[in-house]
Length: 94
Image (cartoon, rainbow, N blue to C red):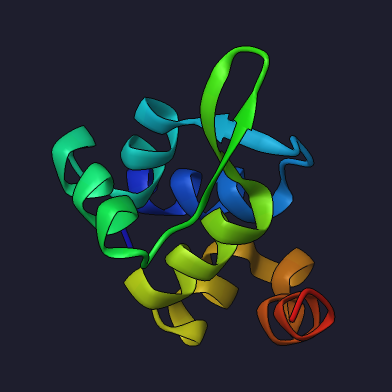
């Protein structure tokens, strides 16, 4: 796994920010801003409105990441910190 993928996955799963700017979310998921906006328009990714504009919530970002990468890749990227993380966290947010 390349370092960029490992870093993006870690930033998505381990950062506790409540939401991210669209451009940041797109970059973390390896999408262009236009691709992310298409997914938002299609209803695949939901956004929230804040005082600083439209954002992707942490939960939505994690759900999108789980569509981009398989669980084994996510757990490898997170190392010991991620064992079982994606299963337990996503289940608790359902």
